[in-house]
Length: 476
Image (cartoon, rainbow, N blue to C red; front, side):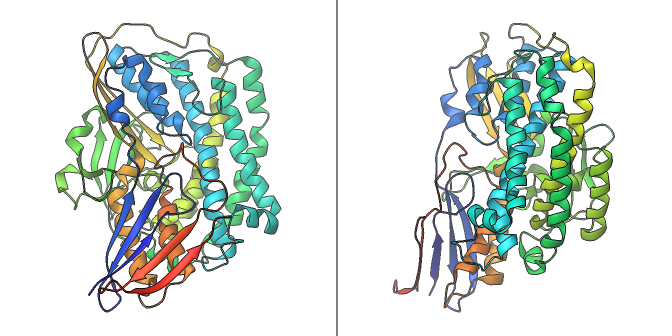
């Protein structure tokens, strides 16, 4: 006899998904599945569109991290044009991407994940949320809001809009940075740097309290992938793909992202709309790898900025290299926020950032364009194939959450086996199953949101289809 537990929907993530846990007759979880329940079809409905529409069109796949899709899409279009974009345009794209990393990581850490750490995974869900956090620790809540505000305002000052700016285009960016806009960003940097340092000081001891979660939230050997520069330092905009194994050995060094198809293949399963990328030399499903904040810290030599490097050294001294638990994504996000602020300071202090030559002009000169960038959640790949007139014939997107799909399913199984009791359900037990997904901060359909607390109705049936237990969470 088997039992099935369904968690639908998963709460405090961006988009819609559900989890099913399959238990044997002794109440042990045998199988765990993470289902993406939406079909959006971006790869299909871009067919027949001119190449220059692709950055803004594909950015609509995400309302939280559209900048990363703008960057990857524009880089693919640069290849179709076969141009080298102006250096200032590349730096301006980097600046907008840093701003996006700050706001997106702030959203994940302070709004979605912090309530679990501040109140505990077993706390009453009526208070275990951002509103409860604001009541218990107003300064912490304000800091999260301020970081996200800074990131969004910086995006707006660069691109004219906070969400879906059309400023990053094929060949560069559409307009130069205005001097007064640079001043408005720069004057805020000391404040947000202090907030980032305060957040690290606050969360480091709190995160260390949850040793059980640290051991079970996606803690297993896997590969890790991310972009690095020629010195092996962290890269979010450019660079080469590096893959390391669970012992820290570099197994793929200096891989040209344009050759991603030699490195990555994609599988499909009938129970989800999300694809399963895997490391091709190891096959499916053995070629499981992870991307994102933790993966980036695991593949690099250094960050390349003083404060972030100091935090990286402390992180590695406490959790090892490479750190294997996806629980550590939370701390890695805060380190990346600090790194992004330091890089903004460097880029904006150089007057060349105000250069007005920010776009290269050309007609289509190549049939394929491949753009790779690091989104907040990990590496994203855009590949467009066009006809002789620059009209898209087909496209392929591999998003960060897709890269992590195998690992997320493995993580759910690990957490469920550690916490789920098939005889009696508790909200805290199932919250941990959801929380391991939140550690990856999946972006399933970021343009879809719910107001307040999402309703949750879970039923536990035995092998004879008899109802054994029910748990209901009402909408707020």
